[in-house]
Image 1 (tube, rainbow, N blue to C red):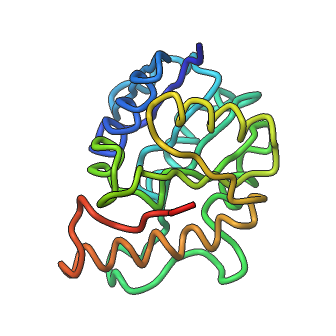
Image 2 (cartoon, rainbow, N blue to C red):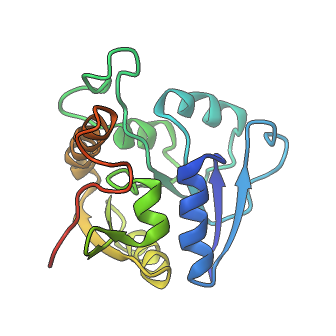
Image 3 (cartoon, one colour):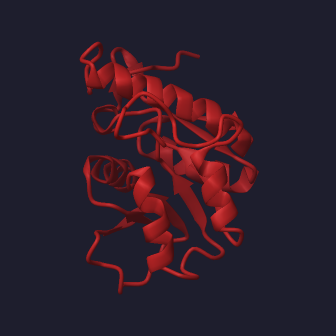
Length: 191
């Protein structure tokens, strides 16, 4: 059984928590006022907007060391909602990995909406969580948690694939925000 710490209490945090506990694993959620509480999970999910990541890291010095850190962010320009705020050849996940050199960083959950995580479906398809990272054991552990929670998990490759995942997440968010797709819809993966 895995123990997962989720930093954030919003809809994505709640949906990920539901997937984790459905698979028989334990979860602790941390809100903004919980900075004095130590992270105890071996896996830490950053379920906060990308602009909040630096503050979260600063408030918890050393607490991410030796842990698998899952970045779910989509680094959009929240003022214009028309571009990503990371370099064209990089990703939010790679930036986070540079800031947490003693952690194993994975990218996951950013190409799904909370509604599809909670329902387990995107239209007629089972919700698929894409996972990118450079550590195969960490990806296998997260894949097992996702699968135990009733969803599909697909290894999307190395952490450098996070850039493409963030582009897909960005497109999906802009389509939903402009009401071209529903917040309970999105992209599905058929295998």
